[in-house]
Image (cartoon, rainbow, N blue to C red; front, side, top):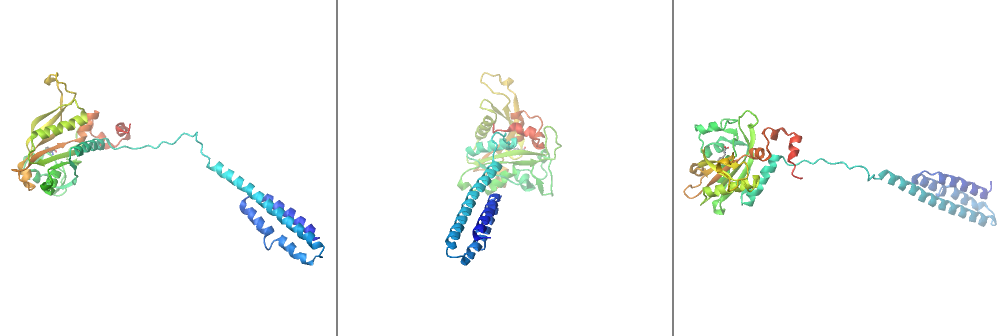
Length: 346
Ligand code: PHE
């Protein structure tokens, strides 16, 4: 076979392979095979040395032509294959904007957490600090420092989970009063704090009792604090939680750590000046009073110089009243059908 014939055969075979290349990688292999240094075309060119001087330019021109044809065919096939690959990728990545979206179910703070945070915001606005104390507490802080020595009959008011004779699950947030008072530097200003948290009592759970519930303690100690300050503060809380038109009422009561002590009621409905006082329905919401001199003394504060008020309110009770929840256990069962009713995101 003459070199010319070899070249045409080679060209045709190469063109077939180029057009059959299924992807860019295969095409590259075809290119290396036919046009590479060890490829058939180079081989043919090498054989030219045996040609006559007349034949040489003719075959040389044909060889160049074949190389140009193949190079052009490869480039064209490459463009074509790239376009096919791009189309395939676009098809695979296509987004159907008409598909319905997937909704992500978002949670929200627990209703009690909402009440607590709302109260915290209000107290922070009035210059209070938010301070937390331990739930596993010493008898010393939970009772002794709150003017409740071991033999005090009022200890029976709070049935206690003891861990050891001196360590217990706190029955109230009042121990945080003692912890805060002993740490406070009065040269830096008055003490104003609230302390939210869980408390524990050996109650049998029912609609109105839970062995674990929440309290928020409040304490203000300064030089000239009066019962009027206490009442004004609690009125502001009542307005915030239940609305401006609600009133509060203080009734004498007893707590070992306050003297005098009061129980505070909030009016169930809005109170108007023309209302007959007899028609107002009151509900008890918290205990409070003026800090007992013994409590101050036990925390190293001179009762002849400093005094103040304290209160302990129950976020669980507030939530029950505000939302008409009749069973306190609902707050602790974590049933989402109950909890999602208090979604404040709107
Ligand atoms: N610690 C009291 C209770 O749990 C509430 C209270 C706190 C009363 C502070 C007066 C002052 O019943």
